[in-house]
Image 1 (cartoon, rainbow over the protein chains, first blue to last red):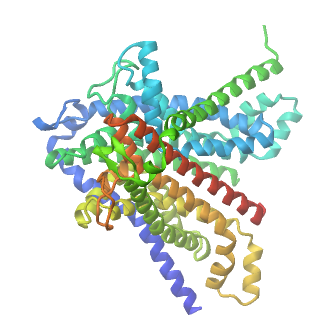
Image 2 (image 1 turned 120 degrees about the vertical axis):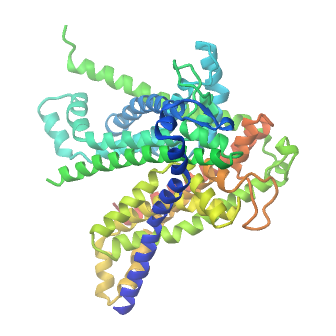
Image 3 (image 1 turned 90 degrees about the horizontal axis):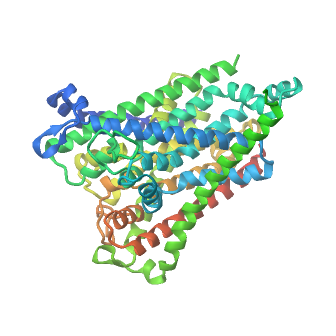
Length: 285
Length: 279
């Protein structure tokens, strides 16, 4: 018994140290990034799109805009394809096929992001340049590549949510004479709604945090985009592109970019957790 | 005119299948495109030589070694901590505020983007702890990054071990620790391994975080404090700076084959686990 209590104590210590990493990350990112935001001025930092580190101009509005636009596009593409895939795999495909295709979707998540970016640069970017003109490196290219990259996240969580809907709901609806499709849209998707919303929010978080693929295909221009064909720089690309040679205020400003990203992601995570918690509360009734 | 529900269903399902086919074609296209362009350049010399003139010539041996060191060490560090945390959460405590906090922390950590891990690793491991841009900084950063995955998958694997197993062990007079190590962990091992193998895959494919923490030296690392360049970063630099397209494709192919092998291995482990526990 004494030995058990000792082991329990050690395990608790390990568990606490595991999550203390999160606290360390928060403290260090803020410690490095916050001072420069205050020095430059909150308004100047967030609402100016003048980023010129050599002149001491640190405004990240264009990157916030870039991240928001690319993430919105990616989410739109990701949601349409993921939901389609989740519905097909759970409802309209023979069980053998579904169990072969699901690991294939998960494999998509394993491919390195640089590979997505690279294939995007050599195939998608020239295609966009050829079809629509412009530089090709654009919001559109970034959205498509990120949309594909967040697909596995949204798909697999949505599949779990749809499968968690009690079988009796399905049977009840079919017994009332509804078609399979009516049952899916009016009963199952509705019952799985919160799980799917959580999946979409997590997908958005993944898209806004993605770095290497976006650097390669989105063009990295320091301006707010006016059309889908304009090149943009996201918050993540800004950090990765300039961290290699930055020092002093410039480096701090990159950490401040990280702080901005961190806050956005944390809000998204909390939203996703709140939504999925509401779901577990409800099914318990 | 009212469209009959049957027609709607047929059209909707048709559209969905089109969407699904596009998705799988994209996956197939990405893989075949890279492998077709890259595999012909993957020769024995490519795998066993160091690079010459910034990677324009020669091979990727130092990057293969660097990748294995950084990713392997990351998983070696994260696995014991992650599994211990999962054991604590499932076997050693009751659900309460502490477990909720730990789970919330792990969930938040899972959502932190890799570039933030990179920034943190750079300022904490490389600068504050004076490890520099090195194998060690890189692997510690990656360890933190894959920790939530290992905790989550281990927890699920441990939870799916039937209660009867534990009861039998206690009934035979086993202590809690004996039950955990001899019965629970042993049954959950394939499930836990799946999570670990997937984390290894994730560490191998990570680029942004290792770029900021392990550096990009082309030499073979001699110690854990040497800077190194992983395959993923080498591929990024080769293609981004237009150094050598054939070598970029070949590096990507090596990377993809490694990831495919790891994923298949994880899948096989998972199948074995499901067969064993019999969910």
